[in-house]
Image 1 (cartoon, rainbow, N blue to C red):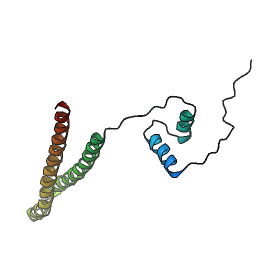
Image 2 (tube, one colour; image 1 turned 180 degrees about the vertical axis):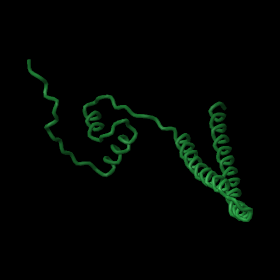
Image 3 (cartoon, rainbow, N blue to C red; image 1 turned 45 degrees about the horizontal axis):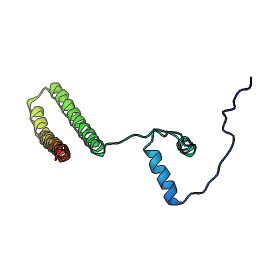
Image 4 (cartoon, rainbow, N blue to C red; image 1 turned 90 degrees about the vertical axis):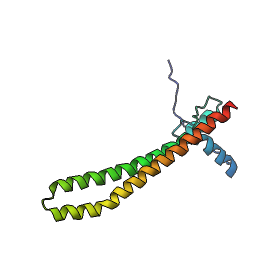
Length: 136
């Protein structure tokens, strides 16, 4: 019995215009393939190409939530450090000084919380408009 040789030892060189390569790269970026050669080989041999659909509004929502989560995490870490510091203070003047310094952190926390609520309200409004627009 002879084994089928699956090594890819033959080269195919082609020249493309800028528009053609951009088109291939755009399609490749929407596919599940990690290597462009694998994607192009499947297209060239008329094999099925697996692509995925990205919901842009969901992508925007995800990026906003990630940024807000990171910001809240940083603020939470600052408060945690401040509370740990409070527990180590022995003198009243130090506690007063600490309170004065951390008033700005409290204000920043309140501003970021309001920003989170505003962003989430915008997203909810946008999604509710999209869902009602489809029903009209």
